[in-house]
Length: 78
Figure 1 (tube, rainbow, N blue to C red):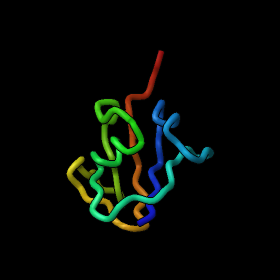
Figure 2 (cartoon, one colour):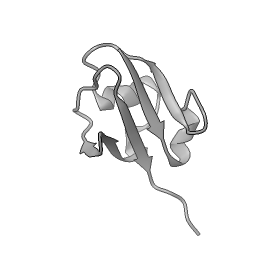
Figure 3 (cartoon, rainbow, N blue to C red):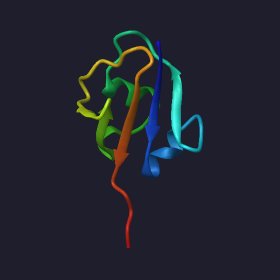
Figure 4 (tube, one colour):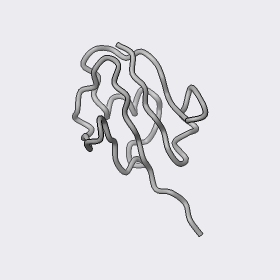
C-alpha cells in the first residue's frame, strides 16, 4: 500500500519530498501509525498528534492504502 505523511515542524527532516514536507512511500498492509514511526526512524515521543481526514488517530490505528495523514510536533517559539 502507498501512504503519504505530511510532516510539520522539525519532523520535516524525515521527509522524502519537500514543499510541503511529506514522506511518501510503500508500507505493508496492516502497518500501524506507531510502526510507521519506527520504519522512518522517527522517535514517537517527538510527535504530539496525528490526524487523518480531520480526526485525531492513535499509534494503534492501522493505516490504509492511499492514506494522507498529518503529523504534528511542538513548534518552536521565542
